[in-house]
Length: 342
Image 1 (tube, helix red, strand yellow):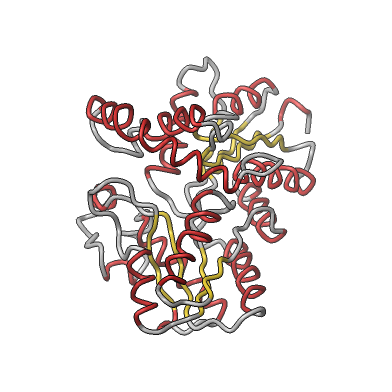
Image 2: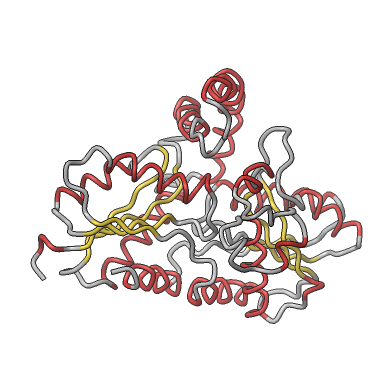
């Protein structure tokens, strides 16, 4: 196939500050939180909330948190995404595919990635948001931004979006491999699957035929809740737990990273920690399958802050399963996702 007929692939992760300096963190927070799909308020109250309250007061604290995980290579979320790209490229036909990465917020931007693909005169673009479970605030935001940019082009090639990959066999197998490796090192009494939270109002907005009740409706996964973020999270837990042979009574799905005072999807991870400690459970293994690369929410929030809370309540082991990062099976999953859309 001639070079001009390549298929462009854009792998998109959430984003990261350019550095741990408070100014860079503030800049990142402003771009992130001003996204109307993240904080779904009208523009003026959203602008006031983000620019007058959240960014000024949260940036110094967040900068300290980022310093805990920053390495010589910089932000783990960025370099793990770079590693994913670098391991994926040799797996794909070089005469057929051109792979770029982008961040929804900050650098490298989606616009930069798309422009680089268009400069190579690709005949088609496959966009893979690196979020396993669809949510308007993540996958939806990436799709929205890509479409916004493409609207300004004179020539728009075919663009294909991969909206989620909750049930992909290789995605599940990768988590099974990582979980089993950790389980071989310790005898755990309970298994927690902690996902990034969302405001309940966002779940309700996406409800089909008023199906969503934010409760037992997530016990089954089907046509009416296939794009419900909460239902997808519970489905991910069920599928990974089944592959690992975990008893249902030893598995808990919960949600972390709340922002603001509005109700978010439950149960909250903080409450689950208290409940487990109250039952005398000492050894817990934690998965974070809403993330495919280790970042602030996994390494610091789940791996350090929640561990400290659990130990203060009498727990002995709160161990975090590493994220997929550049796991070989995960690379094969991404390869299959791309080739299946070609």
